[in-house]
Image 1 (spheres, protein in one colour):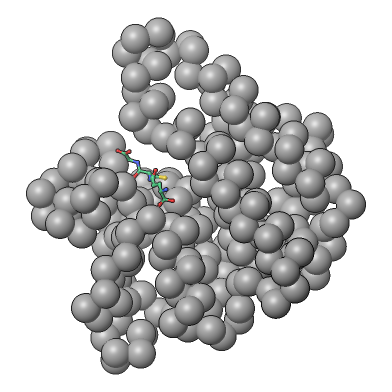
Image 2 (cartoon, protein in one colour):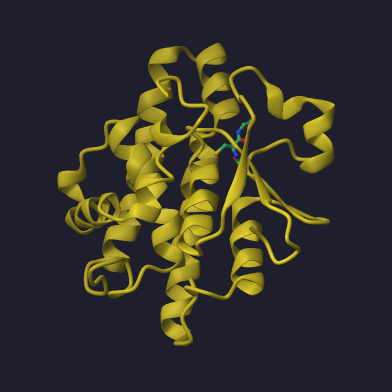
Length: 219
Ligand SMILES: N[C@@H](CCC(=O)N[C@@H](CS)C(=O)NCC(=O)O)C(=O)O
């Protein structure tokens, strides 16, 4: 429930890692929300009704009373300002900058290169066998950097013993790397350990793709 007394609404797709970030942040802040499924495989993100919510035609998008916010980064920073409980950004400037850097590496350096239209383009123009090597190349580049950044810094979670913004972005990306893109995590011991830690947290568990109402196996 948002401050306006109305329930928050999240436009989401079960397998979307960007939606998963928003779901984790909502869960960490203890915010109840209505889940509105947008089926990316059926092209529902392209519907004129959804375009009014997010002109760039991506999930996730959040509606909080009369405020509409699209883009997971914007959504999470909005939630952080409006619902300061369980803060995701620390006071310490160095740690805060590192959390923003992690989020940016994932959201601009990795995920856009594995987004659905990119993979569809590769399949149609280069062949479906080129999709996995392309995705792995870019995930491995990002994971190599993240492993170096975090190896000496990580505590129980990415930047210490508290769950922060970097974790919210890392968890869905590592999950996708492991479950969808067959990334060899033995090259990334810190990230592999973080993956195990995230899988233990209820806020992260509830945000998992297969737990969403629009997941294929969902009851
Ligand atoms: N920077 C945006 C990226 C959003 C994005 O790429 N969403 C993907 C799912 S993770 C999507 O809607 N893909 C469908 C499409 O591009 O048609 C964010 O973080 O929300």
